[in-house]
Image (cartoon, rainbow, N blue to C red; front, side):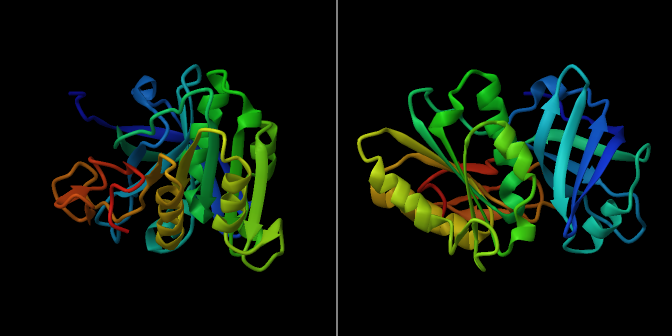
Length: 264
């Protein structure tokens, strides 16, 4: 078992992605070689008003530079404080934590279903697949949000040369509606192909994607979001029920679970 170590690392790059979305690149992270898509880091935000660490999915890593990247949206007090940090400020990082994604077979068509701030772990997953020689033309990247402002890092996705399918609820960018509609159309158009689904986003979207996989017998994985006060399975603050009975801790038994494994 890998020993868990916390360390102070510095912000070397900060980007304002607009609409309260931010990217932070930090280094040097001593456990960079252990990082895999789907895992997360637990940050301690230096503030007298923040008592618990915050979990953030890894959006990218660079072993040569020793950097990790997180992407987040300001939702509450913790992320608001985090958004105020600048280059050269430091944060205490615990990780990498959690169960990573299992890479698909290179012959499979891959359906990516990202919703809102569920983008980061999937961005990392696809980048790693392309890096390992997967054909980007076999990757269908569905990315949904309420409005155009929620579809961030568009150029970054396009640069990977995957098939990009933006969807917004108000129709301000890409197709109008919910992400599962064009996904189901894609599934029906490619019945003869073996596929795999990967998803992360709001609970309602994950439930719909999970049901889609079960309906058509397509295997895959979903990454859950949950409050994680401890991040290492001790506090039981992120427990979810399992379909087969019993419960799992999102922080250490997940956050990645197989389609059909968790009750949503």
